[in-house]
Amino acid sequence: MSTKFIFISGCSSGIGLDAVRTLKTRGYDVLASCRKPYDVGVLLQQGIDCIQLDLASSESVQSALEQIREHGELYALLNNGAFGVPGAVEDLSRAALQHQFETNVFGTHELTRGCLEMMLPRNEGRIIQISSILGGLCLPMRGAYNASKYALEALSDTLRLELHDTNIKISLIQPGPIESLFRPNALSEFKQHIDTEGSRYRRLYASVESRLSSGKPVPFTLPASAVSEVIIHALEAKKPKIRYRVTRPTQVFLPLKRILPDRWMDKLLLKLGD
Image (cartoon, rainbow, N blue to C red; front, side, top):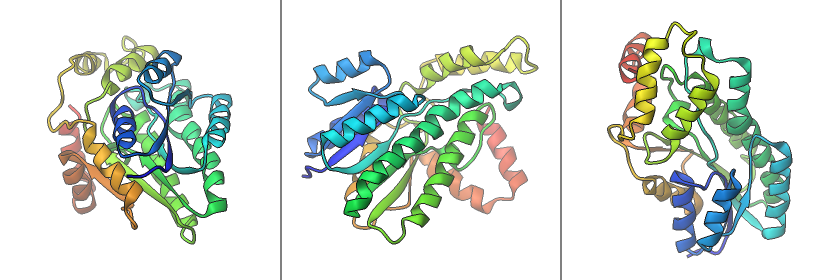
């Protein structure tokens, strides 16, 4: 059992919500956050300490950091808040790409910097980044999300090197398909940001919409608890792993990418992306 204080972003459902419940059960002092005030209210009614945080807003991030400071001595940050904007790269407007990065990269980075400032004086802490299999390889129609997770991985790798002489540990978790509301949320973003009728991919987009709205789990989908298991290890191990691969696709395809020639890998990923 641990009573250490951890802050978690993106807790309305899926990985974040399961992590909150799991860590509270283990005795952690958990402060959760959600983007929508309604979801904050739901968690508060369940007896979970929760604040509102919109990672796309610097003002909201700074407000959250102040509440974290007031809450107690921060030990760990779990960066889970993220979403995806599906669509072909050529159909992504500058505004759509900026929208994707505001939450997945810029807001997450600002939150991380602020939490790191709280950890450095004590020379102790854990920063756990929920990345993705798409932080290690790319699939078509997911360019904005691919890019945001590659950016998160690069910033995390660099930060880990820069913190080598401290007792602050950085871990990346790379889930594949996990039970969550990611696809319904992605469908909403897709309809908002992609001009399907004006695209040469308009026929393919019909299948994209069907996939995102079907509600059927893709093969090898695991419950969010599979991610919570490795979060515990990243928090409690003396030497946490730099990367944790969760789900069979991540465990198979990321090593393959290191072995296979690029063109062979492209053929494989094109089949997966259909």
